Image (cartoon, rainbow, N blue to C red):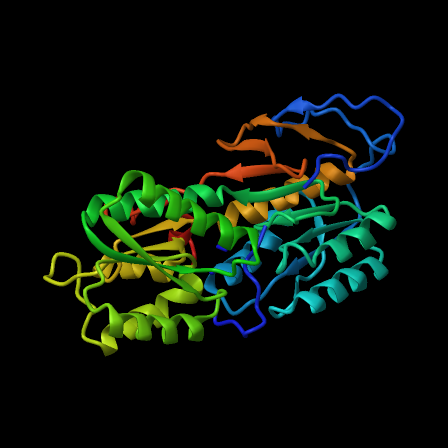
Length: 358
């Protein structure tokens, strides 16, 4: 959530239904396809034109700063008339106000990155009453109507971090610096990491820091944990945009920031794929990160909102862009975009979005 020097009330970069509008006509949907031959439905279909509001959760994270930069570029490439982005400043209640303000401006579609997967339902309900489709990015709402969730597989984030740490650290203590457990992103990453270690690497002991996507909380609790566990062998940071700087600073202050290959090096896996993480991998400060696709989030957020405004719907199945649309337990659809593991072996890959940021 995804990454963010965030206030205490911040909620995670947290994570829609394929139904776009009620219609008596039969809707013929392509199975997972994102090609233009998807049949139109809902109010007979539209031309996909009209203003689109784009609401950000925050801008104190390099991840969301990059997403924000991609939005106008991807809106242009997808022929979407996107308004200037709105920043909710880590405040879930402000995000609902932002949604209402956009609706009052007459937008025909909304692309929202929810701060709180439960609280966002109030805004989604307002949009539904006005007949305005919504695409959720990064976080799947717990309830409410959305045309699609654009998100990577957060369970896979935790599993990839577990696999990497388990291969590097055979025995001993590892800690996961968790996100907000009130968010689906934080819960999925945490539980997946926990379950994977228990199943595949039983000689590892998992310690946990609930940090709520807050950098100061992460730093303080990691400092305390290291005082009691100076023999820590590994760290999984669930959001590099929030936790990278405070984690490295805390380790440095305790004389524990050893480079890869040096005696006493603590193996660190992060999550986001921001340029700062890539730089840390190159320096040997951290070992790996899972690249959360900020560019694809922006691109397919725009793609799906245009499709929704045209009345198009989708079904579960593989897409034409190396992802898969899945139906979540809530019944809403999610396009799970690829999120590769980045190590020193592929950190210079020019295809990684983190290497395209100027």
